Amino acid sequence: MAGNEILIIEDDRKTADLIRLYLEREGHSVRMAHDGNRGLALAENSSPVAIILDLMLPGLDGLDICHALRAAQEDPGVPILMLTARSTEDDLILGLEVGADDYLTKPFSPRELIGRLQALLRRSGNGQEEPENIDIGGLAVNFLAHEVRLRGERVSLTPAEFRLLATLVKSPGRAFSRQELLDRVFGFTYDGQPRTIDVHILKLRKKLEADPTDPRYVLTVYGHGYKFSDQHSAISDQLLADS
Image (cartoon, rainbow, N blue to C red; front, side, top):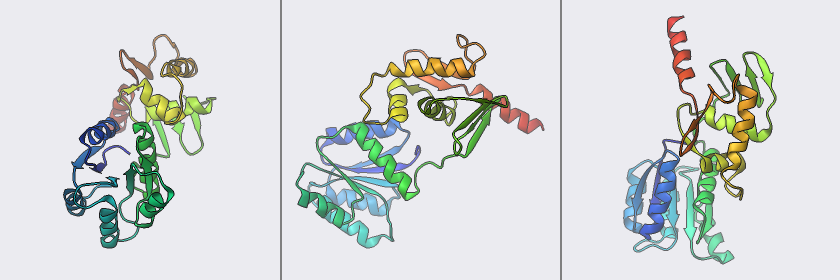
């Protein structure tokens, strides 16, 4: 879902900045407003693919903003994730009734917020389009069939290994931290240690690399995590250009 602009309407600046950092880490651009009037103006005069909206705001509150946006937008409108310190059932139902798509009660985990937002974007069709397959450097990954072939030979991967490879191969050259990979492979609610990823990387290399100690596909980014080599992409593009 990288590259989409998200609007944050949240009066607590520390909370807004924390959300912004997590969103930017996922590749989003972010706009912020710290009061309801400014937030509604930004929502109406820009094109965010999703809005993270606090319920309690100075000026217009979150319910007023949500109601105004839903009245003005064609169905289904931009996804709205509402944040609220209220946890009573009536408050939450009211937020959904005026048009919020989902809600989180404070305090919340930023990782859970990202997971909820990803789900909203997928349902709305604004998430990053998933490729059906990628064939790069002799490695073919079919995402629909969950099948991997190396130079034509099928490679047997566990579900976790496949998700790990899929995450890396979709963004060649991008360095992922261990925590990012842990979130994407096991989910935002997984409570394991980031070093778990090292074990899965080792197993993946044993299945894909001619020499796991000198990998060509899955590379270590020292002090950070791992990436899929972008050198194969450059070679493949050149071969296509020369053909």
